[in-house]
Length: 305
Ligand SMILES: [Zn+2]
Image (cartoon, rainbow, N blue to C red; front, side, top):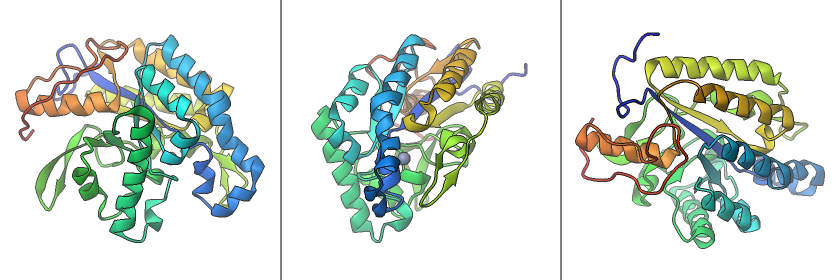
């Protein structure tokens, strides 16, 4: 197997892997159309997330000693605070995902967007006693103001862009900011393969789980060969069905068999990236590759990569 052209990870690490979840629950449907509030069966698909899917996923992560990054809308944290606290106490990360999963393409003004950020942060702070540091945008869209607002509100990273396979710093007006981007892609999103509803709007995908597992393995192989940062994005109500939860576990076990893989939360990878830029040799926040997360991350003065 050919070596990565440039090693950007700590000694002994070939590629970073982040297992991430957007915990939309009922807001996945309420944000699509407010009239969905009158559709109890549709909303029950969101409720499945809290009752069945999240416990199933947490078992998989625990069995395989893998940390996760979970992005939770404020509305969901208000209704299911115990789930959010449980995620945190198990060593997983809880990030910002709007308040009611507001679609950025419908936000009318910068002021409205600032208020949504503040509202979502306030709920997570109330539930967890700490502010979120990471942001995953609903439907993976920004407004022209989003990066500026993230920097102003002290977020350390975003995980939304699709232009790279390694982390990088966001820039505003040509000036580099402290905000690290951890890129994603629809191909590595479960909803693009599996999300099904009669609508409105309709969403009709029921892909064979084995086909998705094969696709995700191939994507991972490419990231691994080139020493990249593999970010898998899932939704508990989508990936948490039995046949799909099985492929998540199979994928994790497949990845774990490869030497030199660093399973980490996104906040740990973002902190590593900044430390690396300062010293040229940051250390992984979670200790050795493939271990469960620990607290504490390298920090320090920043320089350009
Ligand atoms: Zn979402």
